Each structure stands twice: as C-alpha cells, then as structure tokens.
Amino acid sequence: MSENQEIEISIVTPMHNEEGCVHEFHRRISSALKGMGATYEILLVNDGSTDSTADIICELSRTDPHLHGIFLARNRGQCTAIYAGIQNSRGRYVVIMDGDLQHKPEEVPSLIEEIRKGYDLVSGCRQKREESLVLRRIPSKIANYLMRATSGCQIRDMGGLSCVRGNLARRLALREGQHRLIPALVWSMGGSVSEVPISAPPRFAGRSHYGIGRSIDVLFDIVMLWFQSSFKQRPIYLFGRISLSLFGIASLVMIWLLYEKVFMGVHMGTRPPFLGCILLYLSSLGFMSTGFILESLANTYDAVMENKTYQIREIIRNGESCPPEK
Image 1: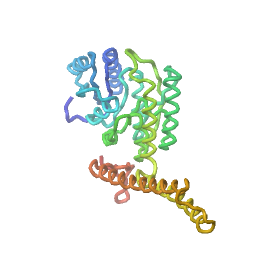
Image 2: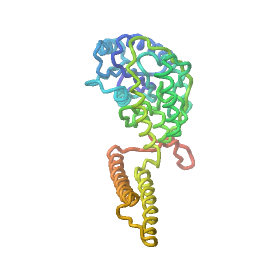
Image 3: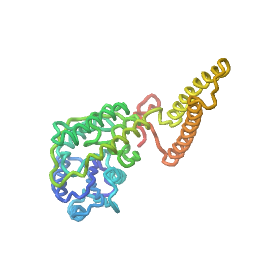
Image 4: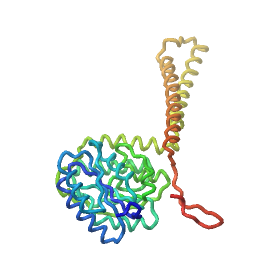
C-alpha cells in the first residue's frame, strides 16, 4: 500500500507471547476486512514477547502489505502497546482488539457499521461470557458499574472490543491501565458513544495474562477516573472543598472551647478537642496547599501537551454547517 493512501480502518492489536494465535488472528481479521471492501491496515504491537510471536509478525508483514509490525523494546504492558499502535495508526476509524481471539474478528464490521452513523466511539458489549464467575465476570460487573457511576458514561462493558474515530483516538494520552477507561475518557471529552452486542468466546490458544491482582489495579484506575471527571478537572475544587470542610469543623469546635473557657472557666490548652482542632487546621492548610500544587501541575501539563478537554460536533459558518477541523 502507498504511504499516502487514505486508510479507513486501522486494527490495533497488542501481542505478548501469542505465538499460538497470531496466524489464526491474521487470517480471520484479514478475511473480515476484505469482505467489507474498505481500505485497512493491521497493526500488531509486539509487547516484548519471549516466544516466537515477533518472528511470526515479521513473516506475515513480508507477505501481507496491509500488516505492520510495531516492536516495543521491552514488555511495557497492554495499555502502552495499545497506545503505541494508536499513535502509529492512519485510519479514519481505529479498532482496538485483543489478539487471543476472545474478540471475534467477524464482529468488527458491526462496530464499523455503527460508528459510521456518526458516533465517536462504539464499544462491544460481551454477551454470555464463559470465563470464571468469581475471578473475571463478577469483578468485571462491579468495575463497570463503578466506572459508569463515576464517569456518567453508560457503556456497560468498558474493557472490551472498541472502535474509536481515528483523529480522536490519536489525541488520547493514555497512561498505564487507562485502556480500560477509553469509553469514559471519550465521553468526558464530549464524544458520543454507542455499543453493540458481541460474543465472548474462550481463548483460541495460550493462557490468560490476567490474574486477580488486576482487580486492585482497576480499583485505583476507577478512583483516578473519579478524580479526573469530578470538579471539572480542577484539583483545587476538590481539595479546596476538603480544606474548607476541615477548617469549618475545627472553627466550630474552637468556638465551643472558647465559650467554655470564657464563661465556664474550663481550661482548654491541654484538652484533646483543642489538640484535635490544631490538627484539623494543619490538615486544612495541607489540603489547600496540595490543591494549589496540583492545579499548577495540571496547567503546565495541559499547556505542554496541548490538551483539549472537549469535542466539537459541528461548526456553523454563514448559517451553514461545516465539519470541524481534523
């Protein structure tokens, strides 16, 4: 393919020790995309595999001009691999999917059909999952519920197969673990989201790279999502409210202690409530200082990264609707 050829669909798939899946994944995704008649590219990101995954990707890239291999210097994790693939994609739409065939390539066309209706993101909602009830399905349901509650995004399955409008996907500055939050991040930027039902078959080969420890990481991701989506992304709003609350509680107790000292002659200097007030005043000062520091860091980060926390739907010029600049 010519480097200047316009690409409609980019498939971004991280691969870590998936030697048993690569050939089958390539065969099935290629067949699905050719059947659509669209221009496409397949980006396989080798995330520091220690088996023959890298060699297989090299072999396939020599025989298929649509396939490009991206090789990370060492294992950096699924999110970093996805981010590297997105940043090297050229497609109008970017499909993010696993390489173990738990995301069926044959269902990609349904996501593309839905996003062509004008959505910024379409997520696949897995049906009838066959994974462990205790280790995978229950933690997933809890995590998805918490992510919906904290972000306001009503996508029911945040961590599965997804398709994002390309120019928006390449604007996302993903950090480790945030691949699970992509629908919520797009929603927080003002993007429109939708979902379609998909199946959830077992792995084609190999073994899962996830354990119960991932649930702890997801919990921290949800806390960070709440922090980012609350108070209009202004740290001073959150920490300022905490600071004022502590200051108010300390002041009320101090007024009560002063009343007892002045009118009842009760000594206050060594009483536990007085010492507690001093601690609350210091904590209030600490929270306010933290808010100012985080606010300065956030302003610096946004300026350096040229972050835009909004998504323009359309622009009206001279009474006519114009598409927003890409």
